[in-house]
Structures are given as structure tokens and as C-alpha cells.
Length: 249
Ligand code: PEP
Image 1 (cartoon, rainbow, N blue to C red):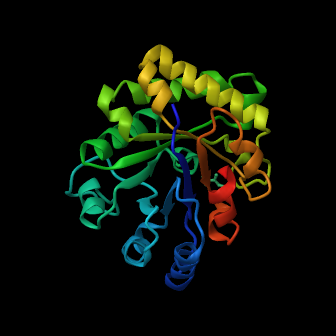
Image 2 (cartoon, helix red, strand yellow):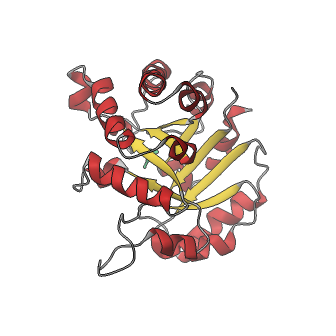
């Protein structure tokens, strides 16, 4: 089946009120491929500004992270219901920069489930380190991350998941995975979904590639049969983000 192309922009801990408004103005005024779903993720602080600023009908706003527990005594955290209160429908979970800060596969699965139960869709991230790749463990690492997620989700929950495969060695390094390397892991993820979840979930779930995507490499990556879009970090802050969004044309 045709899966709608999806491009996420992870602004990470970057930006100011003015720069985020300028990035969004650029998106609002650009000719964006109407067949691409775009989701941008500024820091929590700037979410209300972003929600107010977006007028492009294909662009939504996402959080970069969420807490698994309901509102209560959790200093410094942000809940699913607070994100919903702002009008958000998306969050990222399990970004490698958060996993590196101590989030386990289980923590990530718990917050993903809480987000879905609370009405959010989720860009769930997975991916291996350079050491794991060089040891030949890439697929095993990603399958372990997927298994922890699948253990918490029911069949319908998968409709709210977009998977982002982001090899850690490619994030922010300028070292993009080759089209073959990315396609190979994307195909392995789809095969795993087919074997462990269902044919329908394998067929319908969008699998994004993330890791030093730029306007230069996005067109070739977008041609791969199992690459359904991108999660973009650094380049999402630049005007070339528009070219990445339009790279499936
Ligand atoms: C990311 O932060 O998810 C990412 C892929 O970053 P970059 O595009 O900068 O490598």
C-alpha cells in the first residue's frame, strides 16, 4: 500500500522565539508537497508559539519528549494531557540523545504507550551505535528496541506510531547512512513487524530514516522502497528543510 510520505523536523535544544517564528514563516510561505505530512518539534518552551504560528495545512507541531505518568509531583516533566491541552497531536519518544541520558527501552515503551493512550501520535526512535554496527549487531539492537515497544502496545496502537530509524553514528555527524545501509535496516524492521505484529502493521507503518539528512542526500534515500520519510535534526533549522520535505516529488 502507499504510505503517506512523512518528514519530521527535530529542532532539539535550539532556537529562540524569533528564530522559531522565522522557520515556521518560511514553511507557511513555501510550496510544500501537499502529499507530505510534516511535523516539527521545537523545545517544550516554544510549543505554544509554534502552535500559534503554523498556518500551513500539512504542518503539525510535536513535542520532543513526554513523561509517562499523569499530572502530579514530577518536577520538570511535561505530561501527555498538558501537550493535548496545547492542541498538540504528536510527540517524539526514544530519541537516542534521550536514551543516552538514561532512558531504557522499557521507559521509552512506557511513555510511548502513555502518549498513545492520552491521544497523541508518536514518532518512536530506534537505532544502533557505531560499536554495535561494527560488531554486526545492528538488526539485533533494533529488534530488541522494537520488542520492548511491542510488549506494551495493542494492535490498534500501531496506527499511532511512526518509526524513525536513526543510526546514532549518523546523527549530527554529517555521516549519512548509505541508501543500501538505510534500506537494509528499514526492510528488517518491516520484516520484524510482519513476523511479530501483523501483515497490516508491517504494510502500513511508516519508517523514517534519520541521521544527517540534507537536501543533497534526501532524494536518493526517498527512492528506497522501505523509506517513508525522514526525521531531520540540523537541516530542519535551515531553509533546505523545504527541499527535504519535497524530496519525494
Ligand atoms: C535527529 O536529531 O533526529 C537527527 C537525525 O539529527 P541530524 O539530522 O542533525 O543528524
